[in-house]
Image 1 (cartoon, rainbow, N blue to C red):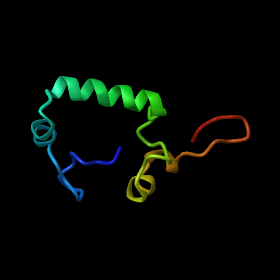
Image 2 (spheres, rainbow, N blue to C red; image 1 turned 120 degrees about the horizontal axis):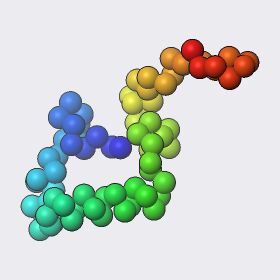
Image 3 (tube, rainbow, N blue to C red; image 1 turned 60 degrees about the vertical axis):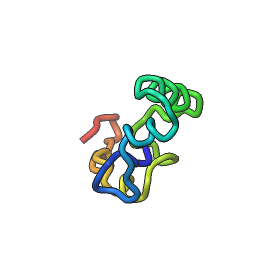
Image 4 (tube, rainbow, N blue to C red; image 1 turned 90 degrees about the horizontal axis):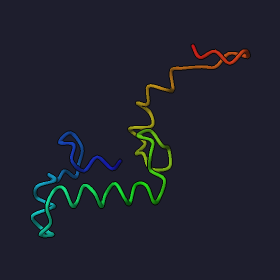
Length: 73
């Protein structure tokens, strides 16, 4: 959600570097990250509460509109 592993964003840090710094394996770190996401309700990639302004502006769902009849266009 914070795009730490995305090289096009600053700051950037690889998952391998973080795991090495903490002395953990990637699978353990991934499992704990999933647990934390579930505990705080970070289950949506585009959740406005956990997204950067850049990601909110680029949300593809912003282009859709719902009609009075409930159709999404």
